[in-house]
Amino acid sequence: MKILGIESSCDETAIAIYDSEQGLLAHMLHSQAALHSEYGGVVPELAARDHIRRLIPLMKKTLSNSNCNIQDIDGVAYTTGPGLMGSLLVGACFGESLAWSLSIPSIPVHHMEAHLLAPLLEDPEIRLPFVALLVSGGHTLLVEVKKIGKYKILGESLDDAVGEAFDKTAKILGLRYPGGPELAALATKGKTGVYKFPRPMTKKPGFDFSFSGLKTYTLNEWQKSKKTDQVRANIALAFEDAAVETLILKAIAAMKITNTRDFILAGGVAANSKLRNLIKKEADKISVKVHFPSIEYCTDNAAMIAYTGYLRFESCKKITREVVCRPRWSLEELND
Ligand code: KG4
Ligand code: ZN
Image 1 (spheres, rainbow, N blue to C red):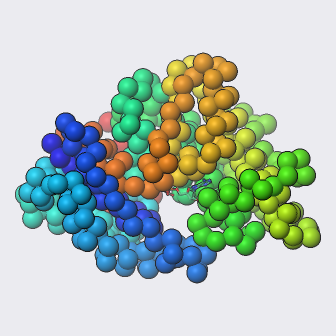
Image 2 (image 1 turned 180 degrees about the vertical axis):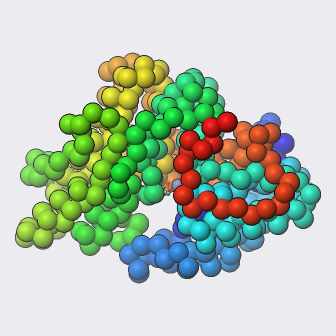
Image 3 (image 1 turned 60 degrees about the horizontal axis):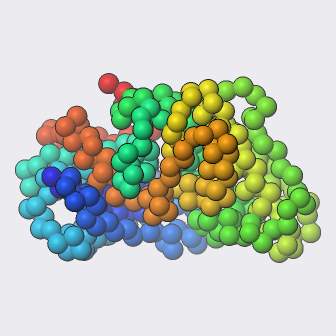
């Protein structure tokens, strides 16, 4: 069975083809980063219009890279939420129309479930139940996964998602959009120990996060500083250390309380190498195996959408041809 996956929930247009026998055949992506960078963040209307321009040429290239014809496709999976309404609508209308024209089922996919399942693309042997930390531009979620499709949210961000905090902090420091990777690169030039930023909510019980205070703390430190390049790097490092350590403290506590043997780290911020290295080191101490996807499957991509579409083919295939998008959508609503 071949599933064509479509991702258009924010500022990446992506197409992939997953084959149940051969695995991922091809995946391609167009990033709109250059389009939005002059505005310092994603402009929703521009994002939706650009998805319209990119989808068909990208699909043609992906089909040709995978040596497939459109008639070989058995199902169309597309992101139906959460995300930006205009961007979601473009992908959903395209996906439903394509499935209708080919008389095949369509499979609406939850973007965060796709992030959560992305590591299984490369390592399908991850043992259930497991715990996952999903860290992206829109979400910070600690989730207990009893089985695929059965999710319990242990904790989440009460305000800014951690990726959003990275992006906003980067903007404060005058870095380009998207700020997360820029800030992480700058942090490698920072001096350790010059600044010590707070680790929010780590003294409180429970697994919720709050990152907006950390962002304001950074703003205050930057404003009262001499604003040199070295200070900028020192502050970037202090912010990164605080955000990463906060995530890890909560993640380790969740591993202990659930007695999990396996832990998944996924979503765009899982591309951060300090987070990847340190969480592995800390989890090793309590004999928990941490899995994370390759960098290309951490940030938004269509491989994870096609794969999730394949796993959900039987339970979610639709023939109603209805276009329903859900900009806000809890993972727990997927539970049977
Ligand atoms: O999952 P994703 O590609 O899109 C959403 O679903 O939001 O995540 C994007 C987020 C952005 O906030 C971006 O700045 C952050 O992931 N990000 C990083 C790194 N790479 C991407 N944050 C910190 N360090 C990185 N290396
Ligand atoms: Zn994402």
